Amino acid sequence: MPVPPRIVSMRDIAAKAGVSHATVSMALRDAPGVSVARREEIRRLAEDMGYRPDPLLQQLAAYRRSRRETRIESCIAWLNDWEPAGNYHKYREYACYWEGARAGAESLGYRLEEFLLRKQSPGPERLLRMLRARGIRGVLIPPHRTVFGYAECDWGGFSVVKIGFSVPALRTHLVTSDQYAGGGLAARRMLGAGHRRISLVGTSILERHTRGNFTAAFLRVRDQAVPPAARIPPLFLEKEDAAARKQFSLWLKKHRPTALLFSPSWLPSWIKELGLAVPDDIALGAISMLDGLPVDSGLDQFPVEVGRAAVELLASLVGTRDFGIPEHPRCLLIEPRWASGTTLPEPCAARRQKK
Image (cartoon, rainbow, N blue to C red):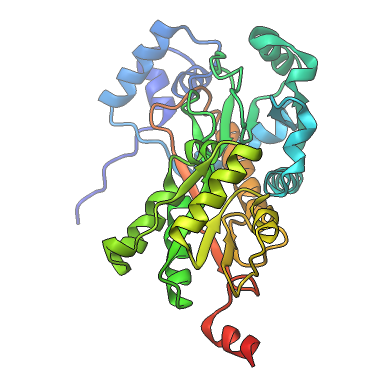
């Protein structure tokens, strides 16, 4: 019976390199206290000797470190660069990101603290000094409608996770709803409800901040079922003003859609002002169920779960001391669901309403 090869340990590497076991451990973890030259030397030696880390031992070591460092790493920073800062929490979808992140942080023994960057005006260098002085190693960056002014910070000593795609200048791990899946799901449910003249009304800023994912999937599914002559182009509005309202009114009269997937929260009031009844004249489904009131049909993107998952990912990075901008950023997607209500009913519900 063949004898299994002996597993190479850190102590074997330490004996070969003439250093302590602790030095080998720090070098392989990129921990401070070991010079770059020595670190590279130990890494090459470990590779030559065939060293492979034991994942169970790594988890145990990470747990022990986290227990020792709870006092200084118990806070997660939530960076709010909105102007004014309170506008972030006016969006119910965004507010739920915060609630999910806060609950997730507490369940893991952390405390989520919001840093109001526009109000404090710390500047990139001072912000990093503040975080280091507080012993904070985990940073969450929520969606931002305008430019996030701290993307170019030196994040070398921090684990950073974004929520959503709205800060493209910062290439780090992120968590978001699966927007492409959501757009396709919405189109299928609208078609399944008996509508063929379907379209999408969004905003230019949402289109940029979602990489066009909702639109791309919506149009792909729509185009598979609707002939070219009957396809209605999507409409993207810049902001809520008289010009946009007129643009929407003209678009509506020209194309006469029977069902819309929409994101602007003001759209239902415009439709009401135009004298159209929902869902008899036009059915409505919201891209965000939370911000599409009074519409009760549309996509539930589970923002609380998005926030919780973002904290869980961040905590795992901090626990393994995975700091800095990753070479290969990861994207964790939370699958949305469709909710059918009175504003875009299923066919059987629509028949019951007519009786």
